[in-house]
Image (cartoon, rainbow, N blue to C red; front, side, top):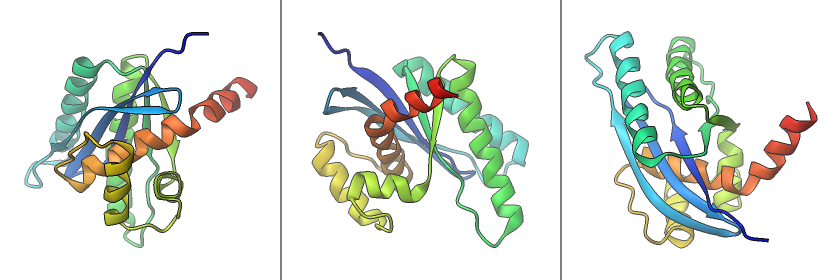
Length: 169
């Protein structure tokens, strides 16, 4: 049986900076394709920031043509207004791939950390170190891009169980 590499887009949504990372998963092999971030100026009105995120993700989707996407679930904090705004950015992060006909999986922050580092409470530096091991050619310039690659890796490891859950429901 011949395997086919699956191109995966990982997205770390944020209102100031939305990270993205693209990898290919071919069996147990992970291949770095690209990563970066979409900056939305804080001085812009919320609607324009959300539009900038959507346009940036549309460019990434057009350029890299992923087959699947994954987004980090929102971390709920004490500031309800900030959580709501982040939820809107996350909605755009889920909508953009869906408009391209791409399924979108969701992963909790602790699940991403546990998958990549082996511990659910790992810090950003530990994630960067493991990215260097798992994707040696990756050179993310921001923590958001690194997080997006970690989300893509998480999806690569869990995509079969996600597909089975969807098929069962």
